[in-house]
Image 1 (cartoon, rainbow, N blue to C red):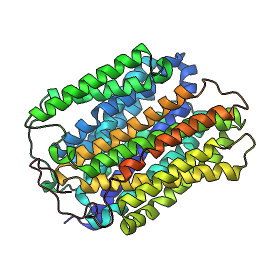
Image 2: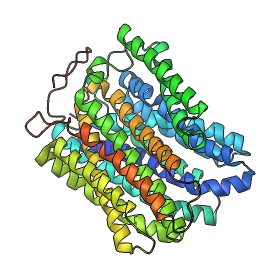
Image 3: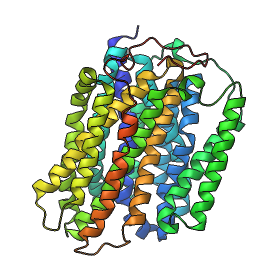
Image 4: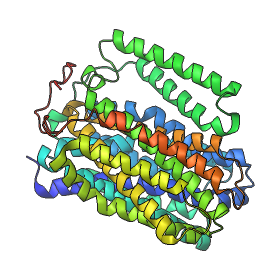
Length: 470
């Protein structure tokens, strides 16, 4: 039995690890214009400081989670934190944009090691009746970090320079690594040390990297461009080869107990749809508030604050809702709120009051936290303890691919430079994104009902590869 203080330290390490990833993403966005001017970089080079990270992290998340299942999530958490801190320190000293891009790819590798471990450690440490509350705390920290990012980043870039947004990660990463030292991982939680081989992980990484690279390139090439069609073909081919290899091999990257889990598959589809709709809407919302409504960056940030506030406040409420009404009803309600919030943004016209915009963003935040808490709790709770890492990696992959897909859709529908008064154009784009978010109602309906076995309350299934009884 893990002692209460070790359990709390595990939660602190998990929340801090998730928080630093959320904070890092918002800090970089604010630093990119200054970085471009200081290093004399081209726009494409600056974009690769984000794309390089995304490709590395998306390609390796599932593999990193599987490695954590075999070798221990505490080790992966510590390696990821130290790697993130080391690359951040190097980025703060980078002499040119080439170094920045290369180091951001390495930082993506570290992020891939870190992220699945933050979820897996909760699964193997917390009992079923307390897991949902721990997930809610983690979600609240993500919301707070995302809210603090623009403020902290703005101050650092204005007062110190773009290098400071990387330097600030170093002490946080050291604290996470120190917290990881206190974590005691139950030995029974590890999967048998079976070889992964090279072919399976390589095919999975190639599939995810090709898919993400294709989606990221859609704004430049269009959905029917030659580069996009070639990328989709490569993704499909690599994916088919990976699926065939999974069926043949005795030791698949994604075990049968995970691949055949309906709650896990439904949660992944739900997260893909909802994150695509939400982050695509936030991308469009930036142009709507600043280019169409004519607000300053600060005024725009204040209009979006209700989203973060409702995410933080709504996480414990969502936990209670899951306990009382079950994952299916909670996720359905959350998805309806996200789609309604995006649709509400599409109806706003220039001159809309702060109350109207705040209400739309608030509904969006309340719905997203309900979906996040429900899907994360379902995925983590349904995972066999020996495979908590690979399930966490799959979940984080959805959380990285979904936003990229949503932004690609938004950028392909919306004009490159919305002019003042083009609210109808952004409105159409937001309506499309609301429809994408609403697609999440289908997988939400497949989540466990209140009458079914509650997520995480059943005894862990065998790790021999048999599918869980669901």
